[in-house]
Structure formats: C-alpha cells, structure tokens
Image (cartoon, rainbow, N blue to C red):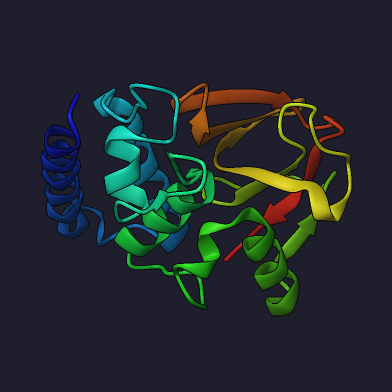
Length: 187
C-alpha cells in the first residue's frame, strides 16, 4: 500500500467514525470511546504493511508524522487511545500531540487523580497502561510503553483493544494479576 492509498483509506475511516458520533450521543462518554475502538477494530484495515509504524495507523492516528532518523512512523498505541477519546467527544485534558505517549497519559492521569493502581478492577473505556515493550524494558514507571482501551473485564481477565500490537489494531486478554499492568487511566 502506498502512502497515498494509506492516507486515502485513513481519511475514509475517519469520515465513517465522524458519522458515528450522532449515533453514539446517548451513551456515556467512556462507552462512546469504547464503541469507536470496537468500530475501528472491526474495520480490519488498521495495519502496518511493513511493520514500521506506517500505513493507515500513521495517517489516522499520527497525522502522517515520520521519524526521519529511524526511517519509520512513530509508535501509535497511545495515539489510538487519544484518537478514540477525541472522536468520542470526551477528550483527555491536555495537549493531544503530547498525549500520544503512554508516559504522558500516565502523568496526566496522576495529575488529574484519574490513575487507578494495578489490581483495581477497570471499567470499559478505561485506558490500561502497561510496563515494558514486550520484555525489552524494565518494570518501572519510566518503562510504561504500551496502552489500550479496556473493552471488558471479568473475575480473572481484562480484555482490551490495543493499537500497535503485532503491527495492527488487536484485541488482547491479560490476567488482572499480569505484572506488566501499571494501572488504569479513567478520564
């Protein structure tokens, strides 16, 4: 897929998301966030063709930004979450460009008293924050590198929709006791 094709597809998906907004207006804010995340997951088009944070995610969530030094798009898991919140008309307070970092979302949640510790039962629409990058970073606050939107939770697991997982938008399940869960942001 060329950049032109990826941009065109990203614009089409964004237009469809915007058309969803009136249909979701009767839902609570975090429920709207979740419905947009589910819609995006259902498109099956949010993938990186080369695995370099490129393609539709680059244009839909990162405004086409490109890391010239490394020759790749910027990581987009947090940008996916921020996009869903913005399109749900329930924006996270703060600069939406800076919030496209998991560490910044974590700090903003702390600042607003919206950070729930690991071990807390999340609710649909919360943001699950995760330490490490598939084991490459230590389990510390400085290592919060991934996030997703909580879809559901049961007595043992949290289910989420996450951008930039396996080079695509994906549904994931983790034990509530999973040690890499840093906490949950509830905006």
